[in-house]
Amino acid sequence: ERQLVESGGGLVQAGGSLRLSCAASAYTFHGYTAGWFRRAPGKGREWIACIDSDDRPSYADSLKGQFTIFTDWTKKTLYLQMNNLTTEDTAVYSCARFGDETNCRRGEFGSWGQGTRVTVSS
Image (cartoon, rainbow, N blue to C red; front, side):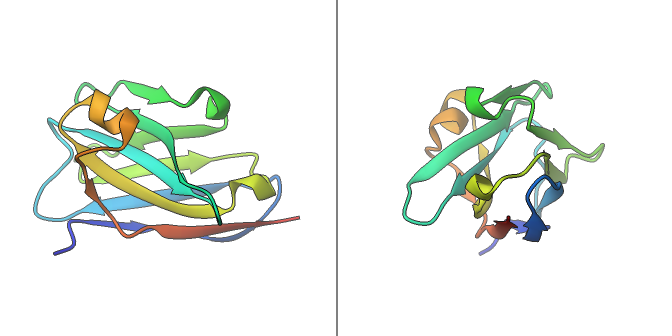
């Protein structure tokens, strides 16, 4: 089954912006913590950001100010606004739902989407 579906990836020039979406089926993010992660070619999964059930975001220190995580008013869709992109941001980006923020930050015990690919060109 597929509960989360990411979209919005593609090719973007360095310095540009993208907004990724994560659509939830059968449930919403209400009462849960949601997060974004990425995996660059040849590298492990990296935590980007989480947003808890009270809509409070947390970010990886290296990405603060560049990425913004938020949900729509229905909490059926999770977003990641990405600005000032560089080639180092090229990766497959995935969203997930967790029971708490600790698991979100660690990327453990979550329900995951399949990811959307972002390629940043110079």
